[in-house]
Length: 337
Ligand code: KG4
Ligand code: ZN
Image 1 (cartoon, protein in one colour):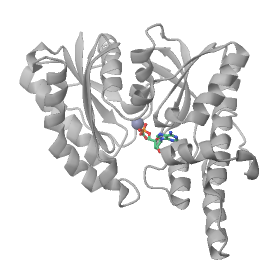
Image 2 (cartoon, protein in one colour):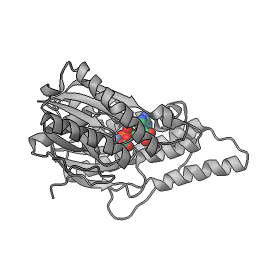
Image 3 (tube, protein in one colour):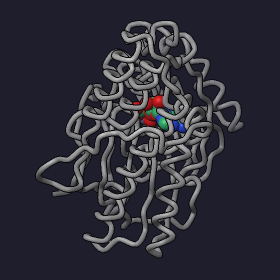
Image 4 (cartoon, helix red, strand yellow):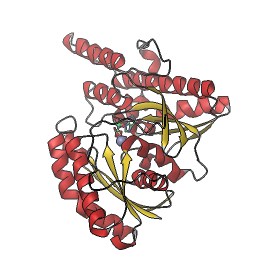
C-alpha cells in the first residue's frame, strides 16, 4: 500500500509517500523556521498562511519524487491533532479535499503517534510491544506501545515539554529559535560540571516529568547575572542543561522499562536528535542489555514520512475518517483502555 502523508501541525509543511508503512518513496519538507526566527518563536497566523501557500507544491513534489500520480495512491494520511489549530486546519482541509476528489481513504494521524512511527522507517525489525519515549517541543511522554495503534501512557510532563525547556533556555542564552540544536552544539563545547543545576523532585507517578522548574532556574540565573553585569559561560551552562535533561529522560525511561518488563525501547520526537539524550539513553540501554531504536536525525523533527508510516497502521486497524474530520489543538493518545 502506498500512503500519502501530510503534516502541517507547526512550522513545517510536509508531504511524503510511504510504502507499507516502512519504505520512504519520497519525503518533502518546507520549513518556515527561518522566517519565525526573527520573532523568537512560531507565529501561528504566519504559519497558517505559509502552509496555505506551500501545501500544494509540497504535495506535488512528494508525488513527483515518488514517480506517482494521485490516482495510484491507496490512502491519504494527515496529522489532525495536536498542534496549532490554524496550521492543522490547512493540512486537514487539503487532505479532505483530496480524499473527496479521488475517493481514496482519509486516515487521521495523531502527531505524537506519528513521531513514534518514525522508527518503523529506520528499523525494519521494530514491532510492538515496546516502550516508547517521545520527546518533542510539545510533548514528553513514556508510553507502552502495545500494538501499532495503542499507546498506554506511563508518564508525561506535568508542565513544559523537554523541547520547550531547551528552546526557552536557549532564548535566554541568546541563541536563535529553535534553540534546541544550538544548545546541543554549545553543550559539545562546554563542561557540564561547572554548573550545579537543581534536581526536580515530583511526588506521585515516578515516571512523570516536570521541566518548568529547570527552565525558570536557568532563565532567572541568566537574568540575575545580566543585572549584575556578569558574563555567563553559555557553553558550560548549555552542557549542564543538556546533561540534566538527558539524565532525567534516561533515568525515568529505564526505570519504567524495568518496572514494566520491556527490553526494547524506542526514542522519538524532535528532542531525540539531541546528542546528549541519544548518548545517555544508548549507554543506559547497553548497560541493562536493552535494545534501543532511534530515528536517524532527518526523521527526528516534524516530517510527513512518519505520518504516512503511522497512517498505514491506522488504516490496517480500520482507523479512517470521513468529511467530518476536524483539526484538534489538543488530543490524548489512543490508549485502548
Ligand atoms: O518534534 P518537533 O520537531 O516538534 C514538535 O512536535 O514539538 O520538536 C521540536 C523540538 C524543538 O523544541 C527543538 O528545539 C527540539 O525539538 N530539538 C532539539 C534538537 N533538535 C531539535 N532539542 C535539543 N537538541 C537538539 N539537537
Ligand atoms: Zn513534532
